[in-house]
Image (cartoon, rainbow, N blue to C red):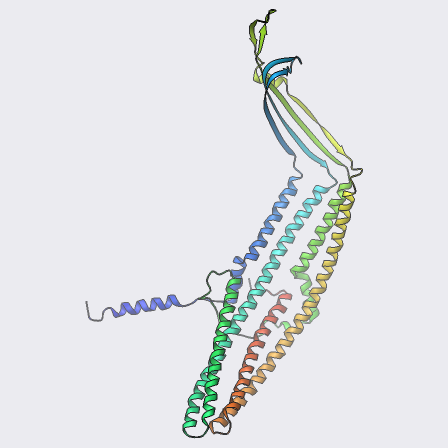
Length: 456
């Protein structure tokens, strides 16, 4: 083997490890889609939809005939009545009976029809509930995603401040050695560095917690290496703030899921009233019954003196099955006259629920209007706040630069310099806070206007 021929292998192995160690960075779109596929709350709501589908099958089954079969077999020992002669005799008999019955609702006050209509509406309501849950999860994911971005940028700011102060410490040491500033200023800078280190630790913890929150929302099993892309663009790409609040509200009334849920619940309540009123009407059922019986008994034949002279066997099985069969069919009419006010109370109770559903729909419309106008005002306010924060940051940066120049020539002490730097740090934090607050509020406003969090 040639000398140093192992070096390429080591480099290749190191590159492989480095590539494997690179963490996948999730986009907002990937986070939302993953959450929609894996979130527990969404899965629970999907089960509600499946339950509604089962209820529909049950409602369809009400239109079908009912078919039941029965069979029994018994042993009778001792004094028994002969089913043929009617006489009592001491003997052992076996008795088998079989039967079948068919029943069908001919008329039931339209309850079956209204129950089926209600079941169909319940499926629609369950689907709307699933959509609403997906929308809520998407908004929660977007908020958690932006919180991670905020904490990442905040950590960068704190590290930059630490780097600036470390350079300032080195410069202060030179100024102290030159006798330009007192040694106390150097100690102030060291104290500031210690405070910066604490801020970095706090920022790191906040970032870790925000990543954990987002990972749990996505139902990820591991979050240690979880990270998101550094997408920090701030803009109103859909120009939503150019819309009038009334236009956004009108658009929201057409598409918002909570209104559709309330409207569907109102229709379900109307069907409940119709079902309850059906209890006042007569019901007509058709029926058909079939039955047969078979007995097994060997009867001893005796002469005049009581001596057994032979055995009389029961008729053959299939002969009895044919000879003893019976059928009945007809219709049964039931007319409700008085049932302890139960039907009337059911109707009154369903009417109360109907009124509550009407009020809920009206309240949902009012809430939507208030939420839209509030979201619009919040988004405009967040934009102005962010613009003001940028102007303030520019001024604080100029102020700090001026203070640093004065400090470098001994015209400002470290305390005043630290105060200027603190104000700059606060201004940077406010820019970050206002930026992500604006982004999220724009997302909410777009959401009401029918623009999804992610494009399909």
